[in-house]
Amino acid sequence: MSAELLRESFRIQGRNFDKAGEVSSEIKVMLRDLCIDAANTRRTVIVAYEGEMNVVMYARRGTLTLILTDEDISLEIADEGPGIPDISLALQEGYSTASDEMREMGFGFGMGLPNMKKNSDEFRIESEVGKGTRVLAKINLDANG
Amino acid sequence: MTLQEIQELLQCEVLTGGDNLQVDVTQVVASDGMSEILAFARSKELMITGLTNIQSIRTADIAGVSAVIYCRGKFPDEKVIEFARQRRIPVLATKMGMFDICGVLYGRGLKGVS
Image 1 (cartoon, rainbow over the protein chains, first blue to last red):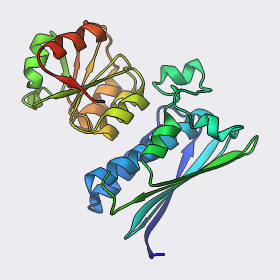
Image 2 (cartoon, rainbow over the protein chains, first blue to last red):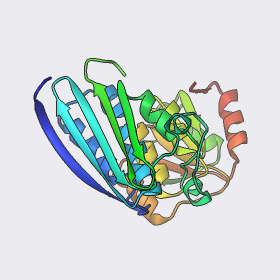
Image 3 (cartoon, rainbow over the protein chains, first blue to last red):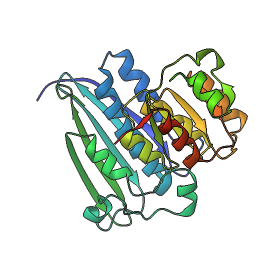
């Protein structure tokens, strides 16, 4: 396992649609400044943004942690929210539990989690109904997105 | 096709980025669903959407599209335009609907992303 070059955690506030996406935009700038290539930056930021939107839409609050090594980028997104009763169903494209309000924001069409999985080399979800959800995504830096 | 040619063709109003209309566009991604834009855009596409909130520009920035056109005569508020200005994303708006915009652009040789 290679050494961590950077670890930074960001707080995400649930239900705050005005600020939704700010963490991911910040990560995009950070990765660009660190000279991470465009394809991997793009994949990482899509995972971060979809994850951030899920926290904003469903949870009370959450944390996104970015971990960079010389081999990969990991994102850990943990929230205090309703949890996911059926993870395999939630990962199906088109399946959604979004409200009209979420759809008016342009999200909640059942593509968020599949998008996150598609852009990750490793992807894991742990969830407990009534407590929250934790998503772990890893993007290998030697893979071409 | 340049953004300027597209602006004339679709009779768009330029909301920001008027100094950057020479950018060349070959592919288009069109949806009101932001995850769909994120799933299909590869980079530098023209994004067409009817969603005018701040998430539309946030998505455009994350997806790396070259410009945004709002359809159906919808206009974003000033906060959204200012955010696009900061991110240096040209933003245009037209009264045409999404179907017609896509038809016109397809007829001129632009392609979708799949």
